[in-house]
Amino acid sequence: MKSTRRFLFPIVAAALLALAARAQTEKPYVVLVSIDGFRFDYPQRYKTKNLLAIGEAGVGAEMIPSFPSVTFPNHISIATGMYPEHHGMVGNSFFDPAKNASYDMRNSAKLGSWYERGTPLWVLAERQHMLAACMFWPTCDGEIGGVRPTYWKLYDGSFADEKRVEQVIQWLKLPPEKRPHFITLYFSDVDSSGHRNGPESLETAQAAELVDSMIGKLRKGIDELHLRVDLIVVSDHGMQDVTEGEVDVGRYADASVRVVAGGPVAYFYCKDAEAIEKTYEKLSKNSKLEVYRRAETPASWHFNENPREGDLVAIVKGAAIFTTQELGPRGGAAHAAEGRAWIRSAEVSHHAFDFLRGGAEHKAGQDRAVRERECVSVHRQDLGPGGDG
Ligand SMILES: [Zn+2]
Image 1 (cartoon, rainbow, N blue to C red):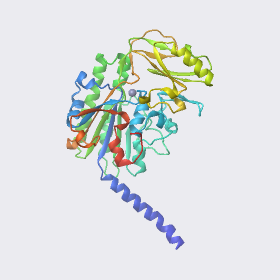
Image 2: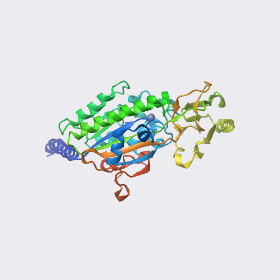
Image 3: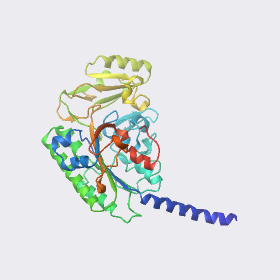
Image 4: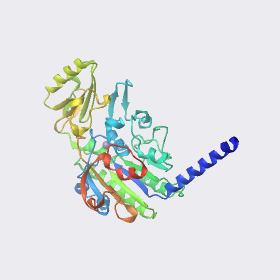
């Protein structure tokens, strides 16, 4: 009996897994696309016809990013449904006092261990016997909780956009049992140009046009497959011109204070309460910034619990950015601390919408503002519970 049970168990388990996997293959497909740094007004400003068409066929919203409105915290908020201080990636750069280590977003494949809570959608899908694929997305090339998507690539910014789209279509052309149901796709061109040339430059207009043509190619490719695909296009934050130079925060802290400053936010890690107060007093005198003790940050930020956020948090006022050294005025652009981004979704094959399944309140073509972590809440209903939404 014992040996029969030992023999039967793996067979039953394998049969159940096969059944679970088969049940998942009958569900619709989701392609989640991110256009990094795509500000909410770009479609009208740059007349991006493919993105505008998705908005018309589906639903859309002006998105309010999580604080701080920078790339890694927000991409991971979209994927986990959690505020940055809950999933743990509280900035593109930050220090973790418990680990005594600094986080470096340039090594996306090694950031799986930096998740404190939260399960990104591709991991959730895999855990539920649904195949996932990532054609780039911050941290999706790393192992998170021992899981990687079935199909993934190590991040390579020079990998051509056209090839990214072709790869997604190829995955959707695989036989049903090998075809991923949840796919991410990421484009960086618009963000890179925004930083380099400003949000209202000719170069950024061209980058928006290029990515829009990629969306057109993707949509055409999906249409030809006659699969039920929910196409969701999101961005992570907006962009503003830096016309008021840089604010040097390094000189406001003594050598014992660790300062992590980048773009519109700066975090200060102090050795004790006295150092916190001393630094707070110095920073308060600078009219170019707002400084908060961590526990006193505005409630709307949801940014007051995690020691990774520093003992003090500062945001720059006006069209300037932080630095830790005096560099003088410069051009270019940066994210505002709370800049708005753009989001649209459509069920491509059916030309109906299946996004923010909220009933009559969300009709095709209607817009409303959503918080970033709400973006994929509808798909989380299919995949499992969790998140701050
Ligand atoms: Zn970004």
